[in-house]
Image 1 (cartoon, chains in turn green, blue):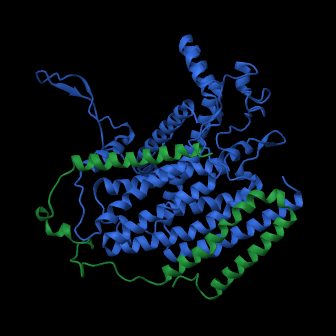
Image 2 (tube, rainbow over the protein chains, first blue to last red; image 1 turned 180 degrees about the vertical axis):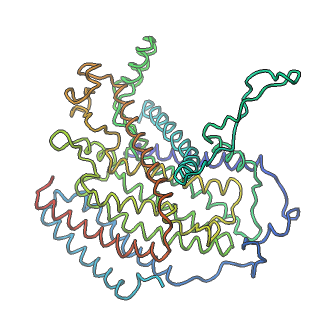
Length: 123
Length: 416
């Protein structure tokens, strides 16, 4: 039955409406200036008040963040599979317990490998 | 679906939005005042409203003004709003305009939407409740028509009664990462970029064990539906001790709370906004109400976290010792346990039951808001490597061990 999801749409619209009202009032009441009328310092990226070294700041970043993202994919997407198991565990009994152990061993082996390889160290 | 369902949904929507937005505003004051009290400062006390108390004895026709009417600094929440609404809404020339503006919308909307599945009161019969109230006031005619409109249909004091409950929260709540990541990347500022990287990597790290830590509790409950969880927690051991989640899995209460607080990126975990290092992190380049909405989202999230903790671990709207009869349609409370029964006899009016339940939920909600701000002003912030180490090397193995141990324990006991 999809009627239960109707209130989700309602609160989404309510939240979007709230944001729109807040931003709308702000653009009505706030000072309005063109970029040419602003002091030059306002148009630079903020850098503690010192002149910026370069204007393009979208730069390459450390690879360790990428590693965290890969680990996230590995663990989080696999744990999603555990929710149906958790809900049905009381009916599954011993079969459920054995299945959990098999699943968890594979997960823990992955974690141990990442740990051993130093993927969890933050250097 | 019928008209009555729509009317009840609108009532729930008004309650939820009113509650959250007011709490969001009030918490900005609570944050400052509680911090001031804890640090033995006077704190927020500047904003005031002048009140005329009579004629000025010296001037002709002027007013004599009272002393500054500050109301413990409560007006600061209002002055903040006025200030942010009247500031210049300024988009710097070096940002990616579309993504920069899109990120603002991702900040508060997912937070508000996650509250849709939190039950703030039990099942209720709006027709019975309203006709009771109207009869008490003396409007018998209106009572009959309202009662006729709703009939004796049972609705939930929960915006959306979804059977996916917790999964909905994880699904919608994780889109909050978009706001940090997009805002930081599009700003074209080094501080923003670093803040975005830090916050997204912190949030996804803590999401991993946030999901695993509650699995033990889900095994015990056998459901992810928040409404069913709330009803299961009304059961008791020996008729006295409520089967609240915090008593079933006390250790996971701390782990889950840690995960949720890390998701909120507030002080012990405020890596993305480390003021001494990164100015304001991923929203350094935002001004006026755009920045205000990022701040507001944080305070709204405090309230939402409090709601989730209350529902999963602290019995939702359940008052300990006050047990609704097992027959859900019969609104008598447990006669021998309840002091209110002494006043109203065996059968308590339905309207009072509803009020008491919502009151109990709000009490717990505000307690958890207070607790989070207490933690925020007590603990110093962690270093970034400490945060990652805590998540991956302590909380995640602990959660995995807990799932296996709970499952084995449940199997040995043969269900609880």
